[in-house]
Length: 142
Image (cartoon, rainbow, N blue to C red; front, top):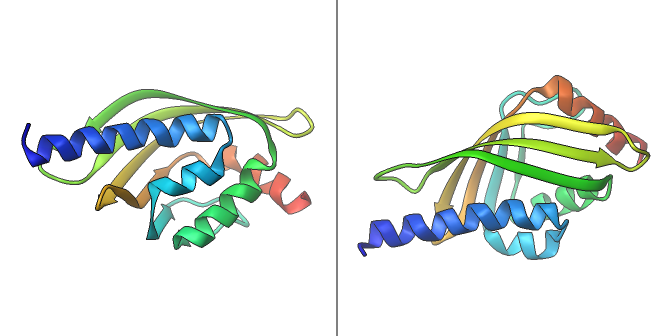
């Protein structure tokens, strides 16, 4: 196995762990997947939500708050596209979550993962911000 194939396999394993740990709401273990200078980019943020979260500490704080509002969280990966000669992996997935209080949140996402030394260095998330607004509104109440 070449280094490229070894890295791709490691990146794919990390992507699967990313979603499994969010499903179990284990944000502490999920944080182990991130580089210290990791970054989440949201290109179409809903009202009241920033277009980036910069640094592992800020990502962890944001996601602990976010996941504190979910009774349950599920993602169904519908497609994975590892880049042939790059550190990128593109993932199509669908979310279904239930917020505390019973409100359901669903969305279809496309994410681009970038890696540095085996850790997530960037996560570009594309989703319908109108649907995500229900989650942002719950955060502002919490």
